[in-house]
Length: 227
Image 1: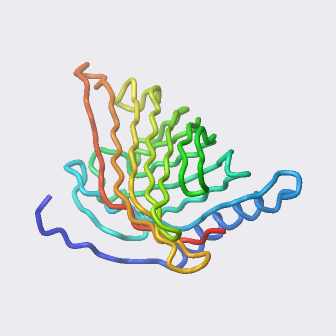
Image 2 (image 1 turned 30 degrees about the vertical axis):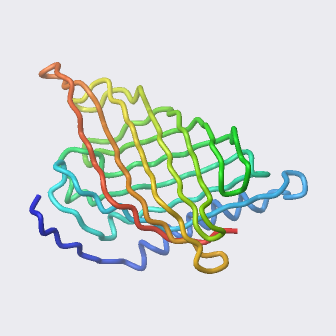
Image 3 (image 1 turned 90 degrees about the vertical axis):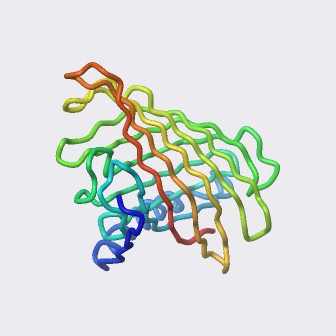
């Protein structure tokens, strides 16, 4: 990659609307559950883009293929459910995954306030490697948040999928994802997200038998609504 990378913004309203509709449907169905029986429900949903900068990619850009999304719900500030989609343009990818989907169930071990906690969880991750196909497996995760001000908090999360099987010339795939950043609520019900994400894929080459690693990392930009 060259040092002067131009970020090209090409947005398709149809892609935005399709993804937003899916997120709204998921969140709406979950929120529609009997709140009286379940207890207080807090949540957030929105869109994000991952501006990847790595040797495994030939370009770092923002376009319709790099638009993803996220949705998260917390029940009684104790049990949490989160799903997220991270995408990179398939045309720009050389080796590393161009799409990652995660679904997690979390439990807060320590939660002195709504915006300060430490949680552990179990989930499922699916990674797609362009036309080669995809592979998926269970993962474990740790999630933490520190409230700085009423409208600002820092967060960090890490997930590990140790056994993602084989795909093509890759054997014994495993995945590690780390994301850390900050979320600002400038207006009621509005959230803005700025973070850094690092994703590692380890595997053994089926031909060479040697251990290999593919990495992707870059800035996460996102925004949505919370309640």
